[in-house]
Amino acid sequence: MTHFELFSLEPSVDLDVAALEAQHRKLAMESHPDRVSGADPHTRRLAAERSAALNDAIKVLKDPVRRAFYVLELKGVKLDTEQAAAKVKMPMDFLEEIMEQREALEAVKATRKLESAHAMAEQIRLARDRTLALAQQALRRDEVETATTALGRVRYYTRFLEEVDAFEEELQS
Image (tube, rainbow, N blue to C red; front, side):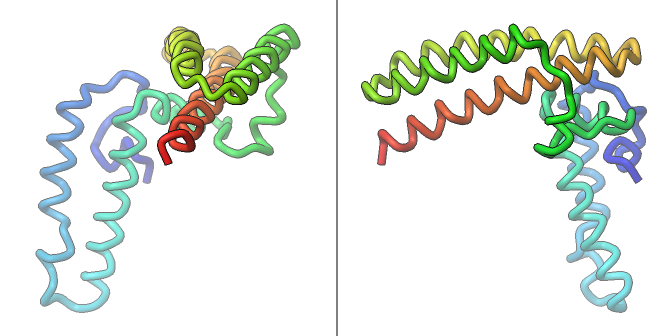
């Protein structure tokens, strides 16, 4: 059963997150393991499994980036592993640009200037958001190859942002 099926939804990059969260609360209450605490072990196990599945599904579906990757996975392309992502042919100019940005970030980290790292992260965040929008449009049109390339780029941007977050945590500790 897919994450969408758990909530009786059609797979889509477009969701009403507030309605999804309300549906999650309702289903979580209905299937909470405490409601069947006196039942047989099989029934308790099924309730625990359903509760865990609902929690996993809501984490993916409420996040637009994770949701886009999941919709792509449902279309047969799983990019959430390094091995699978390595098979995506990224344009050389994009890879060179990312490498330059990462080198610039390394230089900023060496000077320990968090504000400069934040400024770089803001530019990357904007690029990630634009690229995610392109991926979502491609998924709406069932253009899997275009969506795959766009989400491949989103992975690079996300890793960059994670590196900035790690740098910030390092400076704060």
